[in-house]
Length: 85
Image: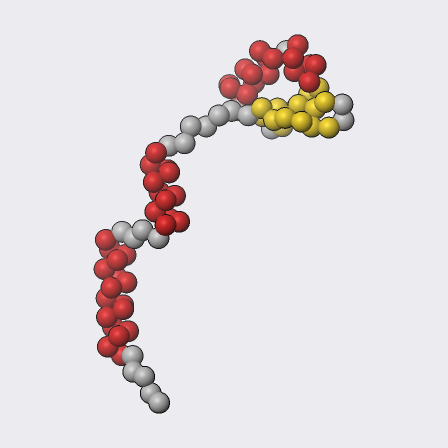
């Protein structure tokens, strides 16, 4: 849930707003004048296993089973592939 508060209200009640962010998992948008200038949100530490999964997904790293299936499919393709002129 995004709450929009003025910068002076945030400054005067910073403890209350930080507690809302930490305990209620809210995010707060801070405005100066009519313009939103900052967002305060809870920091989420990235899990190492999640990071490794992302690397595997985007780097194209295959599991052993996936590699074996691809290797078998390529062998079958090469056996059946013929160039005709």
